[in-house]
Image (cartoon, rainbow, N blue to C red; front, top):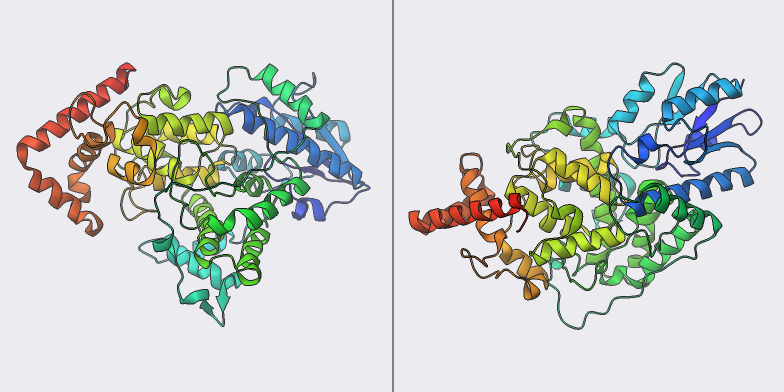
Length: 506
């Protein structure tokens, strides 16, 4: 008796047990493009197109390798548009009772499969840290800080280590990786892949079926096969990684990618493996002389941060998604979907997002995330926005980054202080303020930068929670020195900005 082997859109890997243990004679792979998954949030059209095209290419590769594949396209008239119903339909028609599926990356899907009869969940062995290992690491710790987890991962996988010690003598080169942008930076041209008939069919389908979803569908530059994703990896390591370090926190309006890798969509979908990505970066340091600060900073994002947030997700779910420690309840502003705001930094970050289904981590954290934090936007609404608009977003990686890192809604499980900042930070790390309607140097007034008053209002609003935080002692000392009149003026200005946000003209 054969087995039905379900492959999800973010599990397009040849190394997973779901594939390596398959019997070509008796087993059948099931892949399905269903509305239930494509529409549970308003996904960016590029995200949908990327995943549908990558799925179809993966199914074709399975068939060429001699596997039996049942592929259900979105526009198939028999499509039930539910993974559960497609599993049941395939079991009935193929007379296969047993179903194997790799553990999904979202709690809601794990619950769906756990409730079904004769469904076996297989470990997702692409990751370098299992949820069980993470829970053992977390046990008994008062604080689950990424830095200490990252060091354990470096040791466990012997990455950037020399005789048991970190290369260069330091674990972390952040101090060298926070330079503001400067004139004269030159950015390598990014790869773009020819659209074959599969991708063209998908683009036509997505344009037809999802006309009201956010984002621009074309131009479409995504890699959609493993071979194309490997070319992206090679191109990044050879031409971009050496410059990644100093400028990884910098932002420029004309340059959405800076020196970031664009590999996260491919790693998270299974086209690339995190260990091979880390090893490629390490070789660039050891063999080609790539700067250690750039290589370490990049590896920390993959080996450290990516594995850490997945561990947090599974350790604290299902309760994590409902956390709202700062009692934030404002509705998500309209301009997150449209970019229609006079704040140039937010307008630019959203424009990059809508065009590319991408913005780099500082735009996400210190622009769109920071504004939502300062304005007190409901974490669930922010979470659903991030999940919808980015091609690399799946709940396991997006939720902790949003609730924990950007919004501090988990009460400090992830971060020791909120990542709140005024307009001064944005002005220092970007060129956004030069062309803005608002004046970053103004704390109050009709044209004052909203980030300024909202920052101090946030500090005042949460004084009871944060005043004793040693990382914020200087902030509260500054707040106290301002005196009552200035404090009242800042808080009144913050309320004016919030009212303008609510009325749709910020």
